[in-house]
Length: 151
Image 1: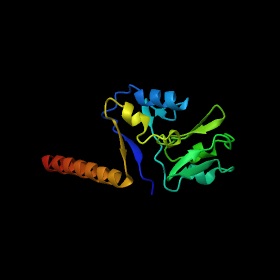
Image 2 (image 1 turned 90 degrees about the horizontal axis):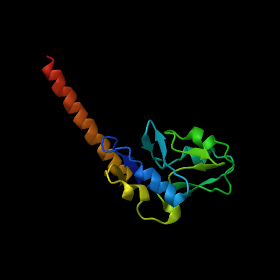
Image 3 (image 1 turned 90 degrees about the vertical axis):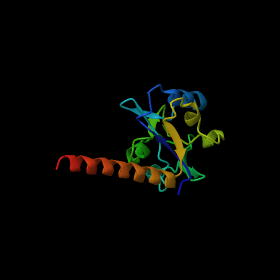
Image 4 (image 1 turned 60 degrees about the vertical axis):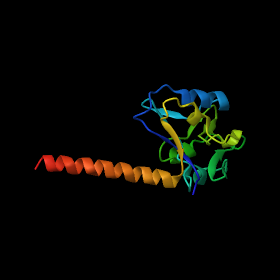
């Protein structure tokens, strides 16, 4: 199990793109994709499809996080196709994806630190599961209340 993933709260995100800008500043190229203006972060899959499908083994694990070896990458795009959330992409003949800044030896990813809106959290999978369950319970409560009102 991967230790951490970045979670975006879209309700807090103001689309300032500080996360994308700091990523570009540190890595030379932003590793964060935007979809409909919302930043998309790699989920650091435990059994990473991007790693599994790579025909030249250009994606390896470092502390459980998939990392692209730029020297080995042939930019075939198979990893981008395999990514379940579209967080990996090809640009300038190499695959790019969030690495939680492990490749630049940061303890906390730069994007999380740069987010002035506090829309980004670095969490464990267990914490994410708890967050999902809390949200599910809130939604269920709202639906039950609405159902009572409609009776």
